Length: 369
Ligand code: 0XW
Ligand code: MG
Image (cartoon, rainbow, N blue to C red; front, side):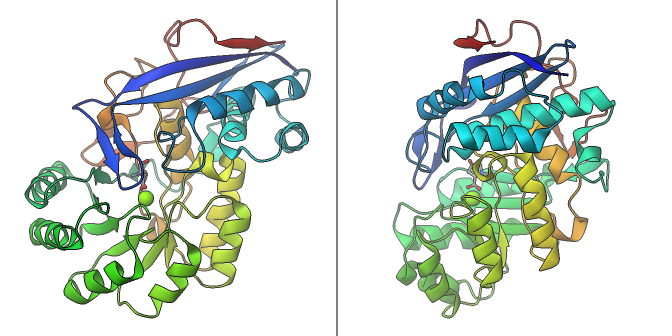
């Protein structure tokens, strides 16, 4: 089998209900998605996607990801897509860095493998340990009362975990929001407070001292691993690393040096499912809970996150976040990935289990092969 064509598509994903905001991304009204369609000489098609959360959330942006994809694509034409490791080497030899772009191709190669072997990607990644995976709901940065309303509504729907976005405003407002959300969470619902790097050590000390009676994890509260190492000695809440888990080397350092208590992981930031599988196993080695997320994305990214999320030991799974609640339409109108009562059913079909509808992405912005 050989890769004979690659088509690259761009698709705007307007945020349903207004905007989505994190401490470092600002208000986002539309996300800019890039999709790769990898076609083999046997007619099998694999899909991948990468959707940076705007230009400031992390050191990447949509047009840059597309340019990287254009740079990489020719190195894959003519290669055997089932030889994923040699394809990954070819990508590294074509371009240094740009995990998000490489992840799109990595996901497509796993999709092709599943379709070629007649297996689901989750079963190629070690096997689904369950047929539904827990999701979690992330509120944007909203008022304390609105945060409590959302938490009440989403836990009533069945979400087993709530993530409260904070940061980029007076710390007293963040503390009020944490307390108001905690008041409405039913027992057993897990609680994450995500500052997306928007706090400093002083803030985190105030929060931990004034919310000592509340069980929650702090997700990427600070802007560097060095600040996290200082703060961990001063507070009584666990810290998960999200934005700083920029690749396998960063994760190995965090785990090896015992710098965090868990992770908020993003498939494309790590470089794709191949790397995420390794990170999953490293986290299991040290019993570190983690999510299986991405920054944003439609059914392709959703299916990839569910595929790896389904293989995570339940006791270490902090859930699979999907942008689906904020996106009006599915790529695959028949088998699109949905959250039902806070949980996501693992698709049954081969590969990623979803097939984008014909024409849903419009004409390619660039084609190769
Ligand atoms: C909630 N997420 C997984 C989606 C948004 O991209 C932000 C991210 C996070 O946890 O930081
Ligand atoms: Mg996060």
